[in-house]
Amino acid sequence: MAEATCDIGLIGLAVMGQNLVLNMNDHGFKVCVFNRTTSKVDEFLADEAKGTQIEGAHSLEELCSKLKTPRRVMIMVKAGDVVDKTIESLLPYLEKGDIVIDGGNSLFTDSNRRTKELAEKGLHYIGTGVSGGEEGARFGPSIMPGGDPAAWPAVKPIFQAIAAKVEDGTPCCDWVGEGGAGHYVKMVHNGIEYGDMQLIGEAYQLLKDGLGLTADEFEAVFAEWNKGELDSYLIEISTTIFGKKDDDGQPIIDKILDTAGQKGTGKWTAIDALDNGMPVTLIGESVFARCLSALKDERVVASKVLHGPKQEKIPAEHKAEFIEEVRRALYCSKMVSYAQGYMLLRSAEKVQGWTLNMGGVALMWRGGCIIRSAFLGDIKKAFDKDEKLTNLLLDDFFSGALNKYQASWRKALIHAIELGVPTPAFSTALAFYDGYRTERLPANLLQAQRDFFGAHTYERLDKPRGEFFHTNWTGRGGRVSSTTYNA
Ligand code: NBP
Image (tube, rainbow, N blue to C red; front, side, top):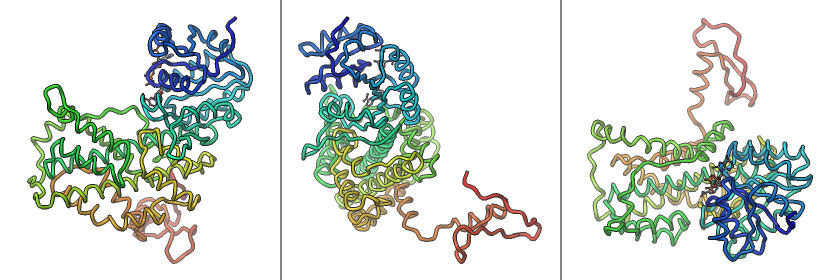
């Protein structure tokens, strides 16, 4: 019988699992590891984990026998059925009070279900988002835990020790909420990441096609942007990417095929937004933009058949002005994207019955993760000022910046249209901004049409909300109207 000396067990020695284990070891926790292909356990112990106190196991039974009770077992495997199968195989070796943690990118509804199913067996479940990729996992990720709150005190010291820290030392990890709340917040994080990346891509293409900037010039422009309002990890790594040369001395960026991949979390965010009736348009457009990029062969054919405007470059004397317009368009669109992401979080609170700490979420995203940025500090301040804030765009700081920059944002888009450069995310952000600030939208006509063809009824400006009217538009319809409900 093995001695139960390990603080935590980790299953899944791929890139995230290995790095999290090494990070836990650095912080003084004794970890026991297991992987389906057990040769990876031996390789890891002989290589990356050599000289550490990390232990290995060749079966789940052995893993569980080496853990102090209550046992803490973290699963870092491919999301989906694999997680359910792994939990199933673990159950015979767990006892009441033990804690199962899923740190992969699981769908939040799976985490809702697993929290309940394990609670029925007397086990505690934590579904946690982990962001920051390989380097984050190794040196400080952003960690977004949810699930069974009873398990949090036992997991908190480990997670907060290994998480990234902001300037004052606060860890980018705190309790998010019950059930799938942690994975939900991670899903929205990933959706926002899709949006940020698409926006940066559109700024790049607009400047490339509009001014013909070279990779070296982009490196300089992005380095400058990274010193101001756009200061962020993604702008920083883009700067490095622009500077990286291939073996022949040419920039690698110019040689990379323009088709984007995706693993599904952006799509989940967009689907959830549709399910909840939330206009999270920028993330939706970002997912579709990746889908369009994947149609490379069709685009090559279409490029020879379909004409755009005669592409005139922006005159050289307007170069600095145009770069600044694009920077402002990027910043304004980013504000809209985050405002939409937070609208989705607000709606999830109502639908799922969670209470999310919005400022706390901004703090968790402030460091360690892919969307980390100075800007998240401003979001945190907005929710510190008013924790019930309905929309970020209504906070003084954000409304002030938008009012100041909106004219430049529009100019950048006018240039995009004139040049024929696709800017789906910039454009949808501006459309949302204009829609959100419009007191009277054309939905009155839409309601009249619905009532005309389907007797769907409408409300009136001159009557209290909740009173529904039907007009016999042609004189031929009956008096019966359709039931009012939202589908
Ligand atoms: P992968 O998502 O590539 O998963 C590989 C791991 O899953 C290996 O340990 C593999 O074991 C195991 N596995 C598979 Br695949 N099928 C299995 C099965 N049927 N039974 C048992 N184990 C199985 O690893 P990752 O990139 O480290 O990501 C782990 C989790 O973290 C995922 O949910 C991912 O979405 C999430 N995540 C990844 C990142 C990132 O940057 N990569 C960032 C944030 C979150 P094997 O060695 O025997 O094949």
